[in-house]
Image (cartoon, rainbow, N blue to C red; front, side, top):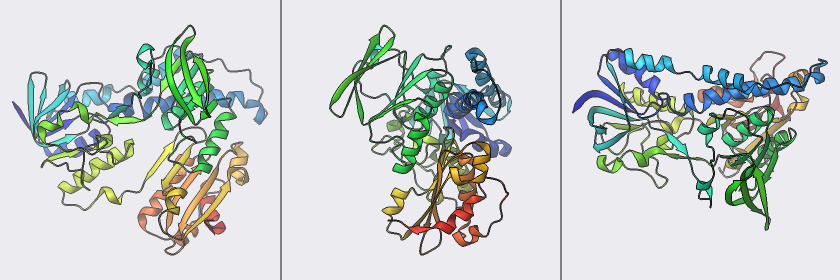
Length: 454
């Protein structure tokens, strides 16, 4: 048995934050990884996909050149060069070298399973830690669809391994991953169909936001179908056959490739948690308290696997909360304000409550909206799709939430989130003097249009 002060199981996005604090202490650290170092974000998530989003936007703007008085031919996509750029951006050799060359860190290659409360077996090696941090993330959910095992379907990882763009990409799932990749590959020249079983895209968002997103994507000739159920899939001469039903009507859709983007599930079922006595909830996420502590003393769960966030920034924040606890601090998961983005173009930035959540909160809620088409900077850039929506508590004058669908929406919500963390009122935010001409400068002014929710 090899004993360490700290054992980190998995190399997701909490890793760098944990190591940044633990390495300088001189404590002995083991990091266990059975797959590629860096987890989802670096290898198959944020880093490579946002590289593709950037490339796809360039192709889109070349096609729009005439809107700005520029004469340009239809762009020709060199997919090999696109992939080369993506792979260069997601190169992770620096992190691997850091783990391998840091004196008090041991990188243990292989899949780890608990064989005791703070004991993990990796192949023939048994690793024990005084403190253990489960950082093993989540994976794409495989839906129960007849015939799925008969076709070479793609998840978000295998999609990035394609060496040629799909002729017709059929996507099952109309949420964040599905929609980002729908727009990317449409802009790179693929025909794209999106199949969503719910009545709207991005089900967690408000209906007006979802409808605006749909209109944006349909303007780019993306075929979107909601309220449809995929009954079965199977091989076809052109690639894959998808049998679906909507409004009682059955039809068959044929595509060259099939992407399953139907959500994610935690990797907790692969870790032998029963042997350690580590509790999970009804969805399989590791149960944690407000400081990411599991049911076993000295064992923490951070990142997607604890079900308390599904983003890189929440994984990093989990690690910060654990480290703060070790310093006798007071940071808690329950103090965290929801903030995230959907990286279609234009992006959706979200912070705090949705309108739907606000309506059921029992508060007296005020709302203000402004279409991007009435914002000068958006018109100057020729980026007038989308809108901004802000929600305020009519009694406390707190900003409750915002949805910013438009140019820089993913950045603008960071400004609003920072203000919300201060606890200052909406009236204080209204007095802010912000740079002109920008989209963000209008956020305080929009608050002049607050009205009660109908």
